[in-house]
Image (cartoon, rainbow, N blue to C red; front, side, top):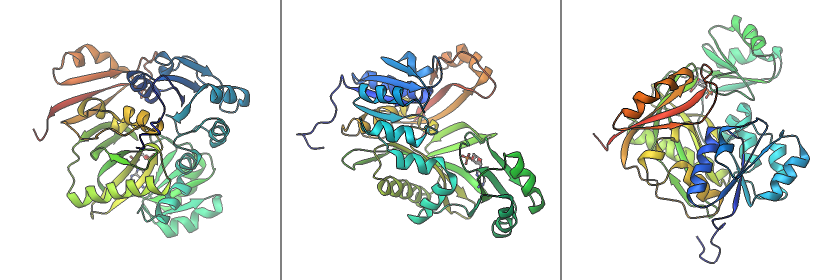
Length: 362
Ligand code: AMP
């Protein structure tokens, strides 16, 4: 970093679009470095607002509230990827938003996302865009069964997708998803799922955390463990792909990229998230600076921290009523419990996580 331009000084205000647990953990890290946060989201009493100096409860289409928010912050970032790009563009007229609207727009649309990935040389599973019922036959013929049909936009945690075992099932699956723009993907016969979480600074410097192995249940991340048990060439392919995405977008902030490791060894990107990520929570306890601190450093234009991992770690998400186990988890000697302060423990809701630590290579 240029010492003459030292980035935003502590005491400055970071705006956070979205009010969930990711925003809460960004705000905690920001507070640790002396920054103030202003959380903006449409929900009342969001988990992030408890930690932030200020919160605005307004819609992402409320121009007046967006302008007031933009005027109150020195820089803005996002913790939720369904924030409309138009809201980000509006804020960006007044305050820098890192990462910007382009990364967000690509991440919001699975067809554009995979088209972009392939265009920059990052491999994905084969896919076809579906805009109308008439596209299904051609797409099924091209992709083959089994395939996975997903809504092009606004899918998360496995919501908005259906497995299609035969061409005859495609139309019913598409109608069940609402009959809107969709993507048909070849189902990957994967050995495991991995992700790379990295930070890229304002000066283009990058810092990659160690590659993580992720296990999903019903489309929701259950566990994330490091180190991921993958050969060096698989690790290198994933890291190169993640770096390529960050460079192509001139990205500033924390970026997470999820991959399938196919049984034939191919490393295929599934999607990227333009924000801190559930598969990076272990960094809170196994690294000198977490993904949340890296996000604060990156968006404030500060030098990035060393991403070295000091411990082996496995994070388990606590969903719904699993949080009731907190006294036992708190008593586990090598576990670190993180709770998100959410009220109602609805089934499947991410209420907290626990990271179990062990010596490196132990
Ligand atoms: P996504 O919403 O794209 O993150 O998908 C959620 C989960 O569904 C992934 O983590 C995989 O476990 C599974 N999945 C999604 N797409 C595919 C695919 N093309 N092939 C095999 N499994 C998939």
